Length: 313
Image 1 (tube, one colour):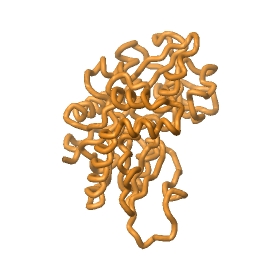
Image 2 (cartoon, rainbow, N blue to C red):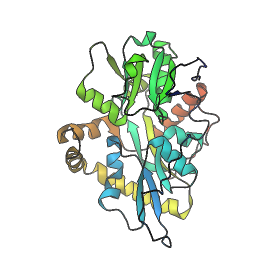
Image 3 (spheres, rainbow, N blue to C red):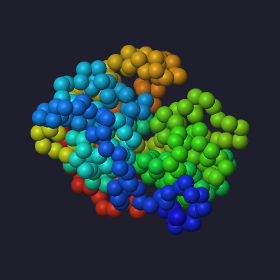
């Protein structure tokens, strides 16, 4: 097995980290299995793919509270959502921004997106030794945009290019990564959970979003909404924008609702949504996308550049 640098790896439960943006994720999940109502095949359904991670909840608020008839939400990991959109299994999806830059989806929706404001707690590198000594980092299978950010900040800020080793066992924060790796990249709910529980003795956590912000002084666009164009795409856009607007306008109610089904209290969640994340893809964020594209190309994690005008207005 080999990672991005070609170093041999021993553990059998790892997969080589080859360019995660040069090929379609190796997955077989079918969003049509068990996700939709049965027996109404004559009705045109609009299928929207999204992640159920806590950070994305404000983007989905309107769709969950008042979903239009004939619209189905399909949940999956971000990398899997990109695969579904690419092969046409869904009409629109919240996909990793690096996958959109790779060419997945014809258009990105202007407005709603998942953007790191700096310290997000949802993009966390946990190390057992100083970062200058780290050689092997465990990452989860469908991690996309965070890996580009991690590669850049470790190289630019610490002068290291460690092996990034894909581990399929989930969740990573409870996996036995400490025996085989120097560090682990925890994303989304796993990173947030680690922050709330506190670091173990001998471990140090680093917020990759904050390091990216200090290095490039631009937002890190984690995920964005994309679709494959046409009349359905235009219809989906209005739903997605309205859903985000309702979520951002009702963060307190959303936080209280999420608190009832998680271990986090409503006040903490409200602060998490309001301070850690932004939900808008505007001019600054589009510049952030261009920076992300340049960085990914520089590390040969992206082959070719997407056209400048890729966001619908």
